[in-house]
Amino acid sequence: MMEAVMIQTAAAVLLIAAAAVRIALSARYEEQEETSGTGICQTNGRKEIQADVVLAFTNDAGTMAVLADGIGDQNTGKLCAQLAADTIMDRYEPYRVLNNPDYFFKSTFAEANRRIQMTIGERRGGASLAAVFIDKHHLYYAIAGNVRIALKRGEELIPLSRGQTIDVLAAEAYENGAISRQEAIWSMDEKRVWNYLGMDGFREIERCEQPIQLKPGDVILIASKGIFEELSWGEMEDILLNGTSVQEQADTMVRKAESKLNPEMDNGSVLLLNVQTEAADEKDKLGI
Image (tube, rainbow, N blue to C red; front, side):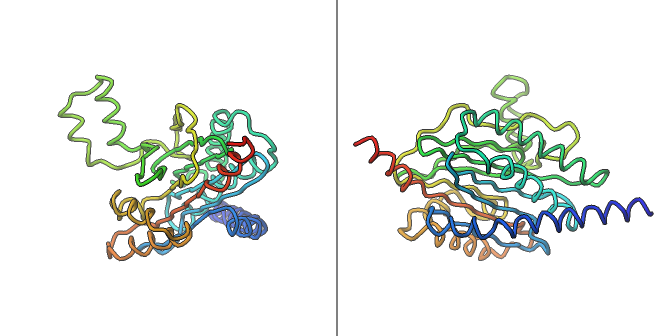
C-alpha cells in the first residue's frame, strides 16, 4: 500500500514538474504560433481528462512539431504524453542544424520509451507519438502508435503515415505473403495499437522512407483519434481547402468532430503547419 502511494506521489510530482516546464516554454511556443503559420486545437471529446499534448517549436534548424496521445487511466495517460512530447522538444531545442533527422527520431523515441517505463513502473500506460521535422526544404516524420500525418498539396490531402494498428499490420503481412487474404480481411476492423511508447517490448517506429520535398502552399496535418475517427478524409480535405487561416481551419475541424455527437468520442487534437512562408523565402534566396 505504501509503495503504491509513493509511486502515485512521484508521478504527481513529475506531472507537476512537466507542467511547470511546459508553462515556462508556452509563451515562446504561443509567440511563434502567431507568426509561423501554426494552428492547434483540441477537444476532450467525451473523456474527463485531456491526455493529448501538442507542441510546435522553431529554431535555427527548422520546425519540430509533436502530438502525443496518452494511454492509461486517470492522469497516467496525460503524464506519459507529456513525457513523450517533452523528451523530443528537450533534445531538439539546442540544435542549430539537424543533419540526421532519422537518427534523431530513433534515439529520442527510444529515450521517451525508457522515461515512460521508468516513471510509471508497473502501471499500465504509454503514449502514441507523432513527430514532424521541417527544415525549409524537406519534411521528415516518425510515428509510434496511432496518430495520423498528412500533407495538403494543391486541392488534395495526401496521407503520409499508416500508423501502428492491427489492421495496418495485417495489411502489411498480406502484402509480404505472411497471411492469407481472408485473414487480412478479418483483421481490417481491428484498430488496436500494437506498438506504442512505454509498452514492454517496444518495437521499431514508423519513419518516412525518403525526405518529402516541400512546395509553397503545402500544409502539414497531424491529428489524433478524436479527429480522424470522427471526420472522413473528404471532410478534413474540404476544411483545408477553405481559404481561412490554419488556426481557423484547426478550430473548424474540432467543432465538426464534436458535432458528430459520438458518445464514445476520444480526445481529439489537430496541428496544422503552413510551410508556405518558409518555402517561399527559400525560393527567393535561390533567385527562382
